[in-house]
Image 1: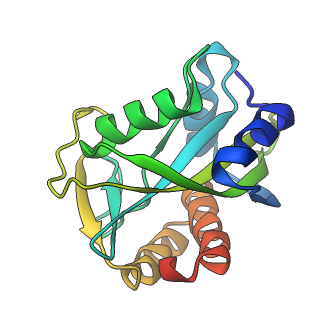
Image 2: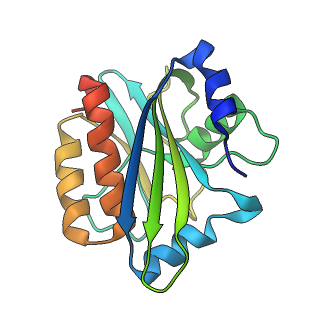
Length: 188
């Protein structure tokens, strides 16, 4: 499933017009397989959520992440699922939080490249959200090892760990956060 420019434009009245950003990222064969494997139902996108509560941001760690590495939660819309329903579902699965979407911050087109393989075009749609909940309790224990609250300052540490990993998917996530931080200084 692809989220079209027309769909993004229809969200603008509710969530604002996002900054657009294009990026190319080389990935290794392992990362390429992970990205390819996430393309069920023709999916080529993720909704990334910066969920704020009491001046902190909800972050997640995947099972394969090294110690100390966290990032903003994300996931895809199911076919025929609305933005609100999909974002709510993903937030609950990955963090256990009930959210209210606030602003559409960034619409990204990234091309993932891996030697000898077809390029993968991917779209990250980044939103800020708020929650009144404070207890993080992910329900998807297969994809999420841990969720916790982080201060905006901790994202610099997360980015440094991502860049040391040399995994293209994590390098992309570090660059994505840097773009978000330029738009929304509270996420620095």
